[in-house]
Length: 335
Image (cartoon, rainbow, N blue to C red; front, side, top):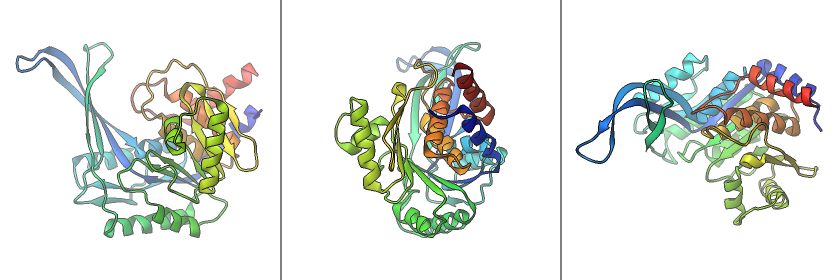
């Protein structure tokens, strides 16, 4: 049992911790409108446009969470020389994030997830359609050299590295391994990879969701014991210090070197409002906690609490240190 006071102490240290977010930066764009009528051209609703909202998504959402927690965080990533890329860099800058190590690439489209929402003027908007603008960086070229140089330079002055791999080509094992080989061994590198969770040996921790862990294991994992076995297998394959498997309404499972696996029950209700970006929040709070000196067990518990909080928010959302502290205090009052 982890003492809630030790978790509060970790949160207090967030403001003095430093981290890097290395990964795929995505723009989440929401276009909101009110229903006007059914189109005569096709059986679809015509919306009267109200407004557009741009929010940091993908790795940029993990970045925004780190900044919201009070971590001194620097992104290493790529945007295209396009309007979505400029919008993303601008909104990160408005959050006080140093964007100088974000590389702008002229022949690359900034990954953008466009969600169209409709509803009454005074009612909750619901998603009616979505389209994605996607591109993939070439494996060779000046862009990858700049990314490697920026990551190596940033890693000289950091406590932890969050790696967010959404499959758009920013994250490579070669760049990551070169940085790991040169950094202080006391620092942490934690990976969240949507498609390639088993291809980054040498990372300290990984955060697969249940589907990603099952894809790696090649089988369905129906019990706590099966999840524990697969998580430990992945940890040993990567040579990692821990694997934190997120399991939706069944909480999380932590497999840590030299310790038996532990199962962390879901925090709060299992009636969620929106799971958008929950994995980004888990990665951010995990890395923030490790950067602030937490053990993997303490970091996992805080990440689990944050995951339970963020799924109660609509859309791509962040968690701040005050919210996390209040949630931990609620644990104290029930202990």
